[in-house]
Length: 410
Ligand SMILES: [Zn+2]
Image (cartoon, rainbow, N blue to C red; front, side, top):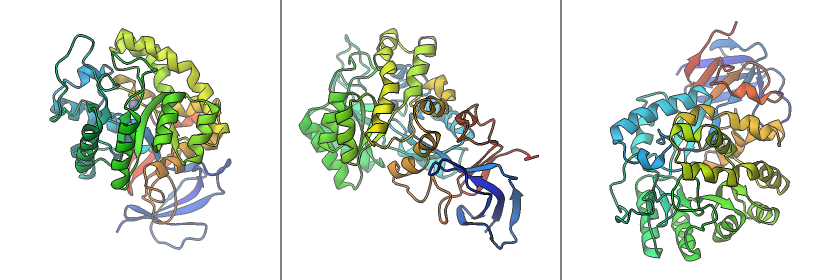
């Protein structure tokens, strides 16, 4: 089994406001074997000379198959083309230091299997299959004058979701996604920007439908993640037992406290609203969608502060589409304007690992964790922008004990 010893590493993992003193990390096969200052090993040594060593980053809100910003058109692309383009999206992510991503609508078990078989360079993939949406909800891209029935099966790889209405249909949809390899269930429980007929204030699914979906996830030993903006939408989902609260731009204090008390996790995605406002139109995001962005963008920064004060844990999310994926790491800097740097980093390490149900395996540098590691020039606790710029400040990136990027450390 190949072994490798990193020496003079200052570990930054988001659990403390300062880097550790220089230490050693022994990698054996795909795992971290030992962390300490007196490791005896004749493994090949890499002297980091005081550089920062971090666990690979985790993004809990991505759409790896959203290869273009217009999601209605994305769904019409052939699977072969979407797959080819998705491999480029995934490669970009790992080269930015993200060694695990949670896909919250679209990616299927085939793509996850292809990643695990190692056909291309990619982060680990946690998937939910297709998101569940009601008729006229955030995954209904049919438009006002299109009354063709929504397909019940045979979804293209490029489609983010599927339509289901009524208790029986939502149960069947959830069960089919779980059967197909979904590791959690994603629902669209509020209006959204990208879809044509649902203003932000629309509430998705009845309370009975929400309860049925939560029960199906619960029976399978997993949880529900919901697309949400308004305080009312968030509250009814928390009350129904939804665990992962995506976006949360318009959350208020009482609801944030309730969500925290119920053990929920929020996944804000502020960077996508910033980018959609700036370049959405030029990249084909429809005009009616661009108009909705401002409804949630400005409130998003305040929401970060509200959730922090309420003690609601926040995981890292970016939610970018098409050519905007290159801004994935900028969420660090945006959150750093409101939140302490180590908390922002923890959102992409410890908190994210918990949400992915991979605690102890990812998001930490500890014995038995996967050797998903990034070396950073400088201290990201002092300057979060070191995590941006397409991995420019990351000379080494390792996933499962294998280097995906190596640059000389001189
Ligand atoms: Zn999303």
